[in-house]
Image (cartoon, rainbow, N blue to C red):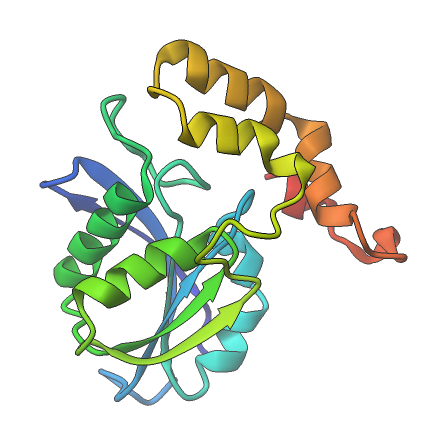
Length: 193
């Protein structure tokens, strides 16, 4: 049985070194169909560790860590916008010679994947969306610091405010455990890695 491979690839245009997981059917040199998995916030391709082998029995499965997440390395000058993330993803797909694929978008990966879809509509064979927003209506109060940041000038002070509010262990753990009656079944590495 094939296993999920851990890989990295350098993208010269964006300066990003993308970490990704990939697995294909055992007897396929180049599988006919590819599924691209885009993770949510706060997460990485690690969230798909159990799904990848299931899908890989029939498809080539590729799950990158978006810049700013997991093990992907981005230069200090990288601009963390959905547009920049989508452009980096397009460069990643070109580097891997992936021109036709299905897109599984989750949470934060949705606006990235949807921007990519608008840029490359003929490349997309299907879209599977789970908890993916393309709008801001219905966002709860917890999103206040991020919405303030979106309206800011992207200064170091603005970035520091949103980082203090959102990028801490307790907020991350809350995002995994809030709303579930069985917190003991949530793997702690999900919100720790």
